[in-house]
Image (cartoon, rainbow over all chains, first blue to last red; front, side, top):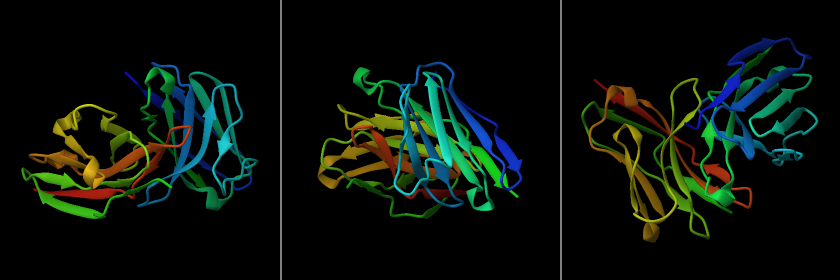
Length: 118
Length: 113
């Protein structure tokens, strides 16, 4: 149980284009989904937290107009990198969590999406 | 502010040897603690977690961890390492009203044949 998928697993795009990454919880309802960015040889950096049906909460320094997050259902969240530039190239990982009020405190992670912007 | 420290950036052990990865946290309330493992180019897999109760928790793949409140530590152990255990290991604690994870910087494990 507690499987999270991400699609695509890798994507190459031209500078200036937009890229959408999907994150799905396959066997549980995700009240909250988190988006992280990871640079080589580094830990995960939280970008934003999104609750189903609400606007995402972005971490300081993360441009909300550049990284659009939608969490329209309890099983799907999307991250859209708008007008991507080479500096946006990175490994993006999502995680999903159930309802902590019901004791569901664990975040389950997707396999990640490697983005390369040329 | 909450923080997690993994003092060992890189550890090398021989296959069959025992392993201990250190993790110290700074958190005002009772923490929820996690260990995750990440293979190259992959997402994170949950090894084990501690919320309350017995301070020695068992996880998958033969790993265990012990919560020591007096030392603010949650060290990960395995009695006999396998070559497939080579990976990056992250300790994490939840914090904030949104229960966000705060990660340590990770420990890279190399296993020698």
